[in-house]
Image (cartoon, rainbow, N blue to C red; front, top):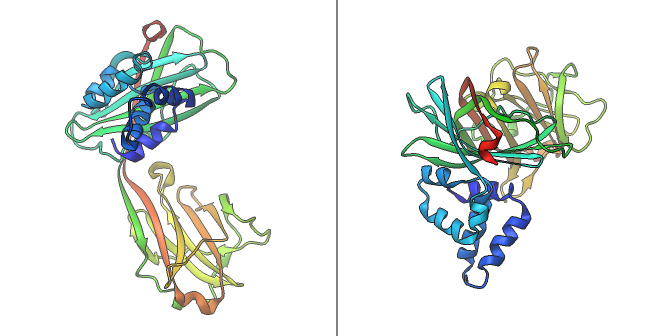
Length: 335
């Protein structure tokens, strides 16, 4: 498990639990690295059980966890039920239902190939039934390359604070995103010194979001080009580039975002390494409501464009797996 995964897990843990773990060990541990390890293990307490840790082959972490707080280590109860669809197995390894909150460890494994990898994402398609109007979080806890098993921590909490009722619990999943690719660097094939100051513009767009400074009421946008200006990743392209009324417009097309979760961010950087973020950005749909165009607007003089290059971070998903995975077990089993 890497630091990013531990950080994600820590963000889901109750502060009091982490405090308890730290106070238990602070007299006997004298090195910062060890303190970090204790905090990390405490973070896993809420989302790991003996079977989950054993499956991930992390006995050292389990032993440390147990030495910190056996009571917390035992909160999640084994379920060990699985189902298979599309050649992929979902197993509810363990779960913990308390008051208005349900937590579970879900393990995913491809039984017929290698479709599951370390980039796998549940794509917000998970659910713990009987919870309505809920706040949900999900983190990849571990991916075991040798076994191909990905373990997720799922937590759902009822917004109204009422206790969970019923005698059964159903955990379900319908989509997986895998084989993600990333781009992080300069768009070397684009020179801002040749950007046109007479671009084709439009105000006829279906806006779906945006950020940064307030968007002007009379904002206009680039008409997407008939062919990409640049394609740094499959499914992600620069679809427009132009300068208008003191502003540089850079338009990115994220294809089929409902099935790919393609996303990213761009900024400018000059020869001295100084960064320039966009003043604001706007997202809008194509006519079929499948592709999303994100337009980033930068304020700088036209004659300074040649001093900058476009930098970007992009992520796409090469594989969407749809299925129907459901597991139901008695509430009494995990109390």
